[in-house]
Length: 393
Image 1 (cartoon, rainbow, N blue to C red):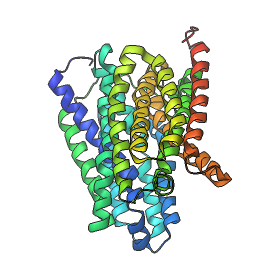
Image 2 (cartoon, helix red, strand yellow):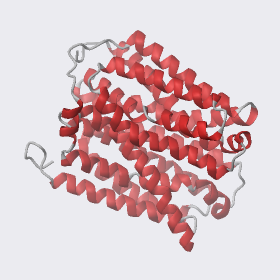
Image 3 (cartoon, rainbow, N blue to C red):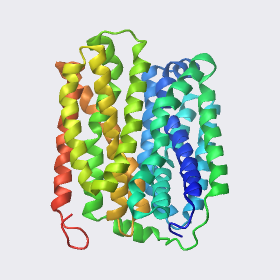
Image 4 (spheres, rainbow, N blue to C red):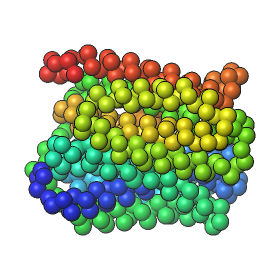
């Protein structure tokens, strides 16, 4: 079943998948805004709540390849609905967790379906879209993830501050139920879909082009997470503004990510994988300007928006992975999000080293520039490395 649905039906499917992405993205970032409430409610320290965030990220890294490999045998419609039900139950468990160890475990479990959901969702819309619209279709699905930063995280933070932090995870569970119901209603079953065995997926996944593309994301995007993770203290101690500007800056970053996501789909449809070079060069310039811009509010907000625009890399890499991963599309598409979570771990870690070494809060910009250069190196290597067909990319 390819290109056989009406445009209106396709948009409804994309909306349903984007709602699922909104719920998953909100679930991923919720604990950041709920940190004080969770710490008080569980009787633990805020750094311990940080481990809850790390547990989710670890779940993404573990679950993306694991569920993708074993889910490759299933029809994508069934797999997506199953993943949403899985995510619903994990977030209900998070909302009802009686103690800290249970919450830690439930957040790890909640992270397991994250990467596979986005990867399979991208495969579904690419399969249903005309070749000239594949990148934009993927970007429309990923809109939900960008809206989670722009709307979902502030909303769940408000819930935690005014009501109860547990309600935030209940809200995520409700969003997942709605997604599962919509997919059951609007996503047709493609009985012509090629299904793969775990052994074939793993065998095809070892292609160098797949791993080089994943390394571009894991390194080239690390600078975004580096700057974003230390944004609050940068605003407080370098820009010297009140704490009230922090949520404004987060919203500005989210707005940049929203626009960048749409731009990324257009860039892939126009330039294919070559768009990555332009995005990384853009990010290199933005990161080098960030330390200079951080001294004034108007300029730091502008640069934060520009950092958000680097999110255009996500739909480009996601769509390219599905092109180069012949025989392992499910695993490669899901692993894209594992790679971005690796960037989420690498960026803040390197930024913390630079700050601890006395380089100041704005050194995150220079760290971001360095990781962008590494990403460019992997991109250049991918361009000259022969593909599985023996051709230079």
